[in-house]
Image (tube, rainbow, N blue to C red; front, side):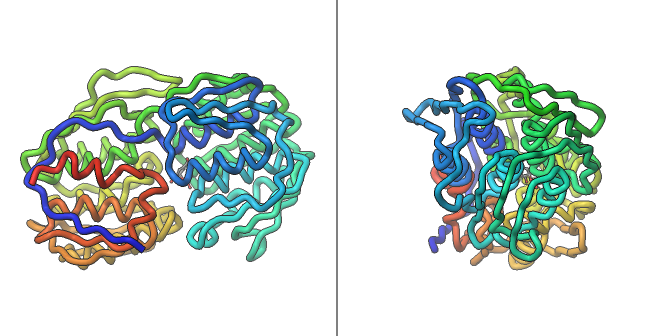
Length: 429
Ligand code: S3P
């Protein structure tokens, strides 16, 4: 297990681009694999999570090449995947296992999905239940609620599903199964989660209808290969946005960031806290909004966060917690129980680490109260094997007292393999 020590910085200056969007990269492989023709993908994120998705499709007979710039996926058509000869390892990736459970539920062969020690603790019933209602036969540990999951797919019927959680993984799993079901499959969620699947289904020619907080997919429609350009990941940008906001005298330009409105909760939250974030040169690429972000250090104040903002910023809470720890007053987070079932329990993990930095934190079941301090402490912090916790603590280190050593940082490679060199590139010391 590797660790890193990050020293305080005077400021952050310069211009960066962050790697491709993780959610869009996963979906580009999945859609490309079941489309007709060769799909090309530029800007693909070569992190461990996305590589797990790539290996999974290779194991089902899909030829995927990578010349270092472009990924080419030789689509097999809706019914062309082959039964994998072995168990598919999804690593740490919740998106891989949940979306693939939906896709494999539609295949008339047997498959088994598993993952690392963290993924095997995460809830799978949220996809197993609706897919079982569609007619899939799925077994897993703890009455089908934990991976490994064994899937005997095929013969699906369409359902109308009211999801109890706002989750793009649940929505997308059902959408993928819906491609294989006879008739129209609908999913409705309490509040809109990221809509990359909807956008990409459309791009590939799926029959799709979007209604208020929901989507309907018609089964049996063949997909056509596309040329995809993946924008930079706003979730990866979030660490640099917070870093530039909290480190005095900073000015940072982050180029080519995906600014899909279902993902920009972090910008709305940080702006309400007083953060200076400008969107420049707004454009659309491969059906997704993109912009350059200009961030200047700002005096932040505490705010209340709940409701539809939560799914729109779901992956950014560890970074937002660091902003809150540096803000004047108290930031309250509520209706964010989902944070407890991410790569780790992110409420507990951030509360424990922030307290060690001298920040008053009150935890409750669905959120936390964080009261900002003048200067963060320092010392040894725990990632809990979660990439976003590790990167958030590295950002906190920039304004810490003497620096922070983050333990167990290998997990950063799941989503952002170039994070540490990029941070060092813009940190002025
Ligand atoms: C993702 C959806 C979100 C998010 C995850 C990626 C996706 O999970 O936290 O990092 O690509 O669909 P939930 O759907 O569980 O909220």
